[in-house]
Image (cartoon, rainbow, N blue to C red; front, side, top):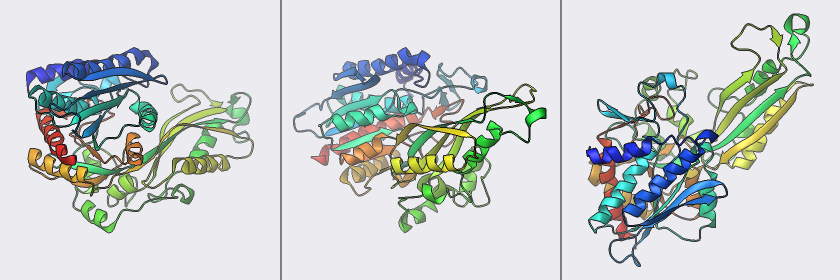
Length: 441
């Protein structure tokens, strides 16, 4: 890896642009401005836009020759990152990029600043050589990790069209096995609050007779949990089932048992390993992300009357967020016993997305990656959520969703990492992609 490139991306990764923490609001802005400065330094125009309180980096690096006739292509990525906690599990500081062995470690190196850097560097190098054949538009946000709706709203209001879009915010199936994601799951994220009385009570005097908020919260959350890997029927409406061809290709992928074991995870049930790809790509999934109530650390024999939880449902392709959110909230409330107050807030949501794999931009992309990497990407789905994908779909913009992280890149976890050798490899692939897209017009 070019040491100058390492220094450049490390400078960006040192900015603790944690969008979920208001204390890092200025850092998110700094990260966005860093991106704008790089586009401007490459000869383009870019500015940090305040989009209803959220920062967007919006700009363009025009084709070296014949820009008026060159195809416009869009690059999306996000310059915010996940919180780094728990800090004690990081072997090196999360915002001090460090090369150890074959890996570059830092929060955001895989998700997504490090991968967005690959696209930026490829466009910059082509422009430097006078060989950029397309007009590269940048539209990047600083809140993807906390909802990602600002970029969606921006695209809806933007009357410009692009012939294609590329997003490096995903991973390979395994080393040397690239993939394009042709579907993403959506998301509805809720905060649930339960109240069961006026004040906490002595459990010896009232336990077994009075409602316990923690018990009620567990009962309420159980109403939306899956059975044998399938969520309750009201939460399954609209699922676009995978085709036989998709299912056949998924059987050629690494075994689900290996995918789980590689992450140190334990199967949810007896069929979870066999159905790994169906459950994570084509089925809705409910997960509780945090619970608070009572006294989980100190010995305190009280009967708590307040309990809270964050819970989400990943939406399968084809599902409609509003309909599923309403059904989800109804199931929670109906499960509460008489006398319990249950308040459910929908904090954020995003639609699932689908990409037409036969679109010329996608086929050109497959060929470009095969030239650069020596392997043709597999067409798969993604279990994650990218709010921009359905927004691009609505505008008719074919999108390559891919990336150079690996299953062991520890995305959203301590010791997030990216293979050092994949930095120049990713830049090469992006250069080939931009060059191939010159034929879109």
